[in-house]
Image (cartoon, rainbow, N blue to C red; front, side, top):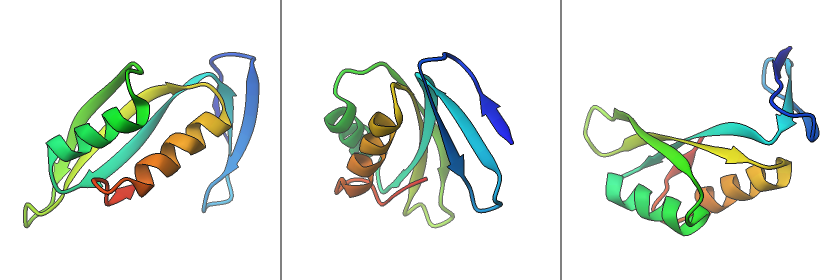
Amino acid sequence: MYSLKLNQEAKVEIINDSAQKLELTYPCTWSYKLIGHEKEAIQKAIHEVILEREHNLNHSNVSKTNKYISMNLDLLVHNEDDRNFIYEALKSHQNIKMVL
């Protein structure tokens, strides 16, 4: 079992594919890996989804054919609904091909 305890405000358990449970205590920092075609397009999508929220965005990788770029987005999420909303909003944005 993984445990991330930053605050006693709220807790949630996440079950991953290996049947291990992850216990989250909110608020906590969450990382999203974003895949798209261009760095600027990914940055625009992030700005449109999270507006002015404080975050860190770092380059991760480029595909062998240079068609795709991946970036890591780290930000403070306040609860499970907040985390899921950001995930769904990024996933559905036209500039984002995939969110992990």
